[in-house]
View 1 (cartoon, one colour):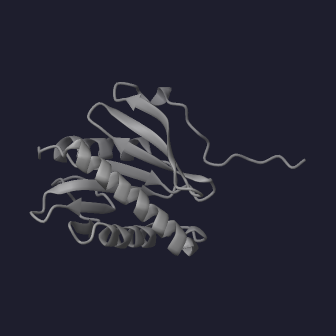
View 2: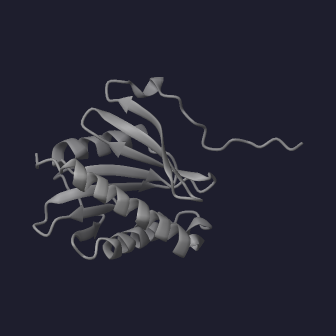
View 3: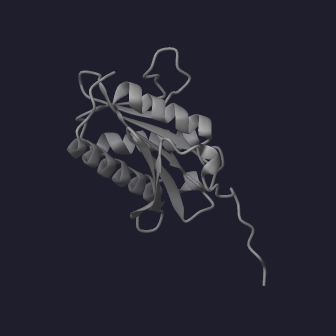
Length: 175
């Protein structure tokens, strides 16, 4: 297992991520009008992260961090010595239990700050998952003012079948 990153770096990386998301939403809004644009979104987000971090880090796309693992983050941020400091998973919809488990395992094995984002094109927010040693935070990231709010914190010991599952699409009643 690689060394864990410190809290100050984690906060800085999350701030860079949030700024990159904002820039991507503002400058590439057409990506949210098209279904199946995850790869294009990942590329744009990685480009924005590269600009924001002023080339201090290496930004990779779709490279495995763990040998013999099917868990491949869409974006990896590395120190110049190639040690991973951040992994970002991107989904168009909510993360599956399998993806959450893979992201959590990647965090455990690499020590990299690991997050995932569900783009949720139909919603006013994106859902950000922040994986830590013993819990996962679920955050709403507003698509209007880019503020984040903690939705809930799930301890790793909580089985997924006890989670409140949010339906993919809620039907609006016409009055």
